[in-house]
Amino acid sequence: MRLSHLLPFCLIFLSCTANAQTVVQLTLKDHHFTPDHVEVPAGERFFIELENQDDTTDEFESYDMKFEKIIVSGGKIRVHAGPLHPGAYTFFDDYHPDQARGTVTAVGK
Image 1 (spheres, rainbow, N blue to C red):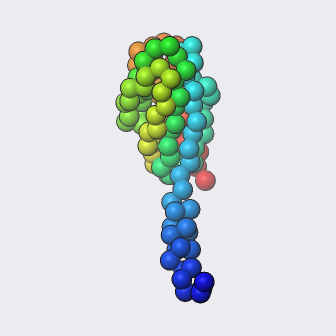
Image 2 (image 1 turned 45 degrees about the vertical axis):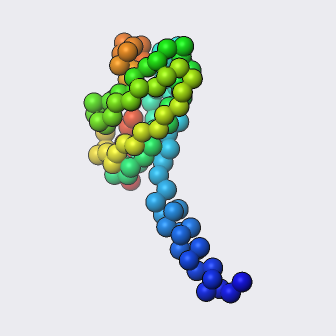
């Protein structure tokens, strides 16, 4: 294969890796998030992936990061968040807000 034929594939690969975003993995079990505190780079968009290991349907919500999503028992969801200014941002299970709470801290470079 000629080098000129590989160029489009290299450009696509570089484009995809340049746009890679941080993925934060959370688990909801016994109405508690694990981990319940995470750090992300300030000024960058990121994903939060949540797996619900509770026996109930829950509602993953954050007023600070402006998302709200229902997650069924045994389900997984992914939400976009950011970019955030440096600081702490809360998230919670709206159906069990006194038990299931957590924070995302956006850390400056």
